[in-house]
Image (cartoon, rainbow, N blue to C red):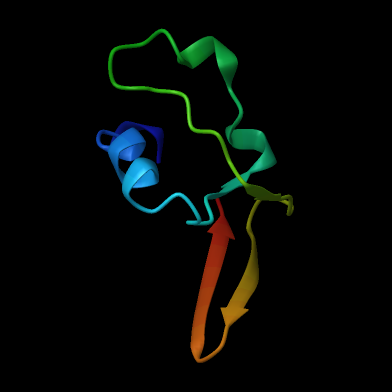
Length: 68
């Protein structure tokens, strides 16, 4: 969530190869000026319909992400 991005820049500088995934609909430029919202440069994006889920896997890690 955009209100949880404090420290994002520091994280990326410490781990520059980290993948940052975001939903296409999370690119809401009008909110960037708000005090709790900061820009997040996604390395990868996904797009799925509202009220649907997608699964992401890497090795033995599996995450299910729901677009609500």
